[in-house]
Image (cartoon, rainbow, N blue to C red; front, side, top):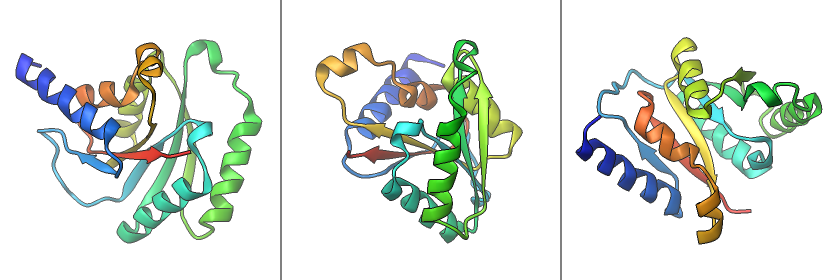
Amino acid sequence: GGILDKLLGSISSEIAQKAHCPVWLIPPKASFNGIKNILYAGNYESANGKMLRDISELAAKFEANVHMVHVNNEKTVQANPIQGVVLERLFKKVAPDLDFKMGMVVSGKVWEGLDNYAEENEIDLIVLVTKQRSFLERLNHKSITKEMVFYTKTPLLIMHDDK
């Protein structure tokens, strides 16, 4: 809540977005009780075979369930259902033994929808996928990662889509 928290959150967010490796971010009040439920918060474009394999390997190490969650706002709630089916089939092909659940959240703010879902479903880790953006792209893009760093109480794993 204070200025120091905002500064540290901004620094953490910058590091997570610019790093060339996955980055774990642990909120100050988080407690570790194991990882049984992982929320994969990716849009359909970031779901590729390599990313899904990485997430399924992480889940296998912890014997965790994966919740694949997509957030729609009120205007896009009637999103193309075929995208969800394609993603589900890709995940089943990449990780046939993994227990996963597809979910959709309707929220005006992505971070708020994800945070609420995490709380309601006892999520232990939120995985966000970011991509490297140019300076101009960053000017026009609102960072979900940055908002999650500021507001969530759940540990985050920031992964990078290098497509």
